[in-house]
Image (cartoon, rainbow, N blue to C red; front, side, top):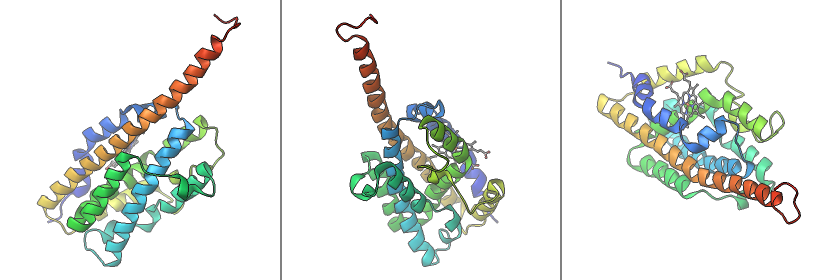
Length: 236
Ligand code: HEM
């Protein structure tokens, strides 16, 4: 009997999805408050996370792992797109200029740990990030583009899935793939639990970045207030 993993994941992470959408960083983002220096930190964090996922899932896929290999669709890969975006935000020497936040380090460590101890759980991380990107990507791209005044593709490659013509069709294929993985209900439950952890890792990352965003907004406000109150100012 097949396990309906796709709907178990959707239902089992609904609450976490709502919580992620409600973190300060994401809410600011949705309102168009996107500040370049904290946004590029997010891109850097995502680079470390996707590099770890693509490295571990790639290895297991090459070994023909029966649960991990089927979900490893190359059309979803994000590492090259993120490298391109990092070059845009940090310049040629980007790889020497970026480092992961503490939360991203923990997220990456979890990916490497389960790749060793329970590789099936990587499916949860794969689902949480890639299917999320595919689902919300276009909206987020438009917001980021407007807020940071960017050109059509500048620093926005992460959101572009050139090899996927029909997102709905692809998501249907992905769901079928999840439902046909050779796992039992016990493993399905563990995968849903791990997906909730993946959401939590993302929220932690957003919260850490929110601190940067608040600091950056604070600086702008501080500059605005102090400019308004400089000696001789007529604005008081
Ligand atoms: C910026 C805030 C977000 C918005 C506006 C957003 C929006 C959406 C939308 C419109 C869908 C499509 C639902 C459907 O096809 O029926 C979706 C699905 C999804 N999102 Fe988000 N999302 C956000 C944040 C996140 C975050 C932070 C994550 C995880 C890191 C995430 C992971 C997912 C996943 C895994 C799905 C697929 C659900 C399923 O059909 O199984 N989303 N999201």
